[in-house]
Amino acid sequence: MPSFNQCVDCVIVKSMLSTSSESPKHVVFENLAAVAQALGHAHRLELLEGMAQGPRSVEDLAGLVGLSMANASRHLQLLRRARLVEAERQGKRVFYRLAGDVEVVALLKALGRVGERNIAEVRGVMRDFFHDRDALEAVSREELAERLNAGQVTVLDVRPEAEYALGHVAGAINIPADELERRLADLPKGHEIIAYCRGPYCVMSFEAVAALRAKGFKVRRLEDGFPEWKAAGLAVEA
Image (cartoon, rainbow, N blue to C red; front, top):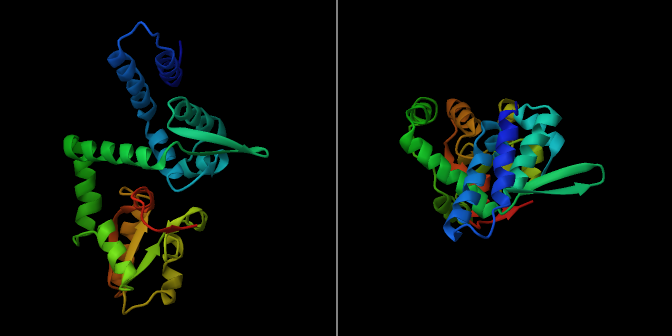
């Protein structure tokens, strides 16, 4: 009996081989359904979030999501067949990237909005883990861009150093979340700090904000993360 992933694979391949005798609308919907099938696993959504930071090797992505190399490769192949990611071989290693940062990030954002509005479990997690832990309103991308240009804030990237190196908000300093406690002296106490990480569901920025406020820093979060900032066409450095 085929596994669930094999069944998903069959649907994706079948949709890509649709015949010209089908109506144009059906062909479009069948291929859109294949994309939806590819999104239908938590690990694949996490892999997409990882690639939204920049191109990543299979080994890196497997470690990020906590998968074996074989399982990570399987999920990545399904995403590739659905045209959500692209692969490039560099020597003995294969690197994956999003097939269109703007479109795929927007797709993930839209999926999140639907979940937050329509699914009670998602609303509960957002309320209990995210909103209740940070009563202050997050900073929008537009506001941060204006204040950054005016030199009014310090932008703090709390992602791991390797992700910061792939790309970051222009002018941001990098202190990974697990190094924050011992590097407090690197942060200005008299300047407002705006922290960000991988995206709207990344807990690192919430934890960093809570830890810094407890130490007397004036700090808020960016409303989402680096992928959304980059997809919006705002200034980045690599």
